[in-house]
Length: 312
Ligand code: 3HC
Image (cartoon, rainbow, N blue to C red):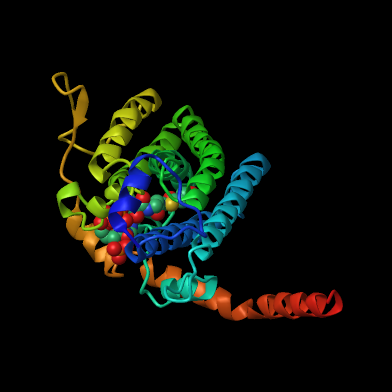
C-alpha cells in the first residue's frame, strides 16, 4: 500500500470505501474511533434511561424515550460502520469491539461517567452534551471514510432535536419558580466542565490528532471545536439567565472569542483510568444486560441460520 498516494487521495477530499485498499494504521485509527463513538452512544443511554419513569409529564417522557431510542440507533449505525473495516486482522466485528468496551479496554466518552441527579440534568445533557456532540459530529461529516461520513449525516439531524429538547427543558425551568431555576443552575454547574472535556485533551496533548488530521478523519482540532462550542453556548446560557461556572470566562474583543479557564485535566485523566463517579456502575450495567439478554442474540442467530437453511 503506497501510503503517500493514499494521503494524496484523501487530502484531495476523496472518500474511502470499505473495499478500497487502505493503510493498516488508517484502518486501525478508524476502528478505534468509530467503535468508541458507538460505545459512547449506547452507554450514553444509561444516565437518561434513569429518568424515563421520573419525567414530569407524558410529553417530556415521550421526547426522552425518542431521544434514547435515537441513541441506540446511532450506536447501531456506528457498530455497522466499524464492521465494514473488519479484515480478519484487526477485530472490528461487533462482539470484539463491544467486549473491549465491557472489559474496560476500549473507551467511551468521559461525559457518561457523571450521574444525572435531577430532571434539570436531562435538560443540561440535551443542551450541552448533545450540543457538544453536534459540534464534533458536524465536523466528522467531512471525514474521509465513506460509511462514517454518511452515518454522521443522519446522526446530526437527530442530534439537533436532542439539543433543542434539552434547551427547552431548561428554558421551562428557568421561567418557573426560584427553586426550578436553581435546579437548572446546579445542572449547568455540574455539566459545564465535563461537556468541555468531551472534545478531548488540548491539542498539544492529543497523541492521535496529527495522524487523524493527515488522514482527513479529524477535520478540526480538539481545542478549535471546544472554542467554537464555548462561543456558541455562552450566549445561550445568558438567554436562560444562567451563570457559566468559570470565573475566567471573558469576551476577548481582540480575538473575537471567549477566554475561559483551564479544564480540570486531573479529573479527566482519572475518568479515563476508570475512576470517575459512574465508570464502574456503567460497565456493570452493560455487562449485566449482555448476560441477561444473551438469549435474544442466540434466538436471532438460530432464526437466521434456519432461514438460510430453508432458502438454500
Ligand atoms: N472521553 C473519553 N476518552 C477520550 C475523550 C473523552 N471525552 N477525549 C479523548 N479521549 C481519548 C481518546 O480516545 C484517546 O484515547 P485512545 O487512543 O485510547 O482512543 C486519548 O483520549 C487521546 O485523545 P486524542 O485527542 O488523541 O484522541 P482522538 O484524536 O481520537 O480525539 C475525540 C478524541 C475528539 C473524542 C475523537 O475520538 C472523536 O471525535 N470521536 C468521535 C466522536 C465521539 O466519540 N464523541 C463522543 C460523544 S458521542 C455522544 O455524545 C453521543 C450523543 O448522542 C450524546
